[in-house]
Image 1 (cartoon, helix red, strand yellow):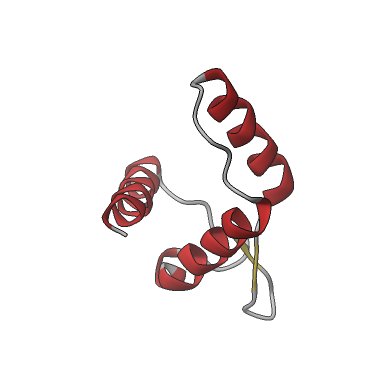
Image 2 (cartoon, rainbow, N blue to C red):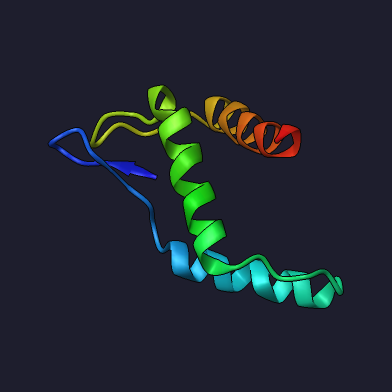
Length: 79
């Protein structure tokens, strides 16, 4: 997720992320998640974690990024 100058956020190649997840599900013999459900989940997660998305041009420190990723995954597991 990247923040634009106007304050809005953009998901980076969500369709390719979905395709990559489908490949992983196929390898693990898991059912695929419909694309719409995946994209809705990405959007909801970005909205819920909007306070952690840095302003345009600011780089996230590695430690903070790991915390954000952990919160993202732990939130998804709890739903």
